[in-house]
Amino acid sequence: MVLLTALLVGPAHGQTSSALACGVLKAESSKTSATSQWTISGPAEEITETGTLRSGPRFECLNGTILVVEFTSSAGHSFFTAHFADGTNIGYGRRQIDRRSGRFVLPVQAKTRIAQPYRSAFDYHCRLDMPADPIPPATRADCLF
Image 1: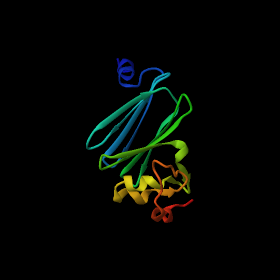
Image 2: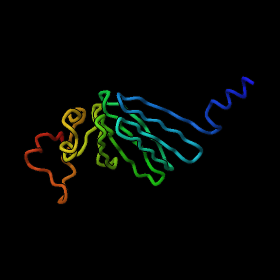
Image 3: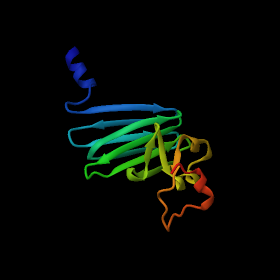
Image 4: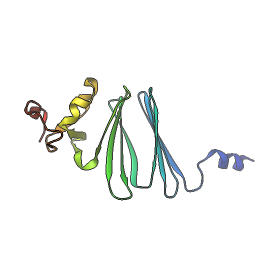
């Protein structure tokens, strides 16, 4: 009977799971043989995604208020999403994000899209200057490179 209880309570054969709490945000993931599913819960909503991934999802908590999710699809496309305690989020393809000295470096255009209390958790770069989303000259001083 004890063995049966352990089997019913534990993860299914071939399934792995992980969880991370980050202030008011919580991330949970599970993986069966080919499919990953992850859920991000916060004060305003719950977002669940499912996919066939090459790697991830990987969760990281920044400053106890920002939950970062990174993953690479089976097609090789990598993604970065930062979920903030105020219920907002911002996402980019991983090629637009850098990591230096343990800090995420985002395109400088992201800075104005992130609420003031969370901006200092990131550094910024000026590599992503596009006609549809130009970099104002005044913000270039905020760029590491």
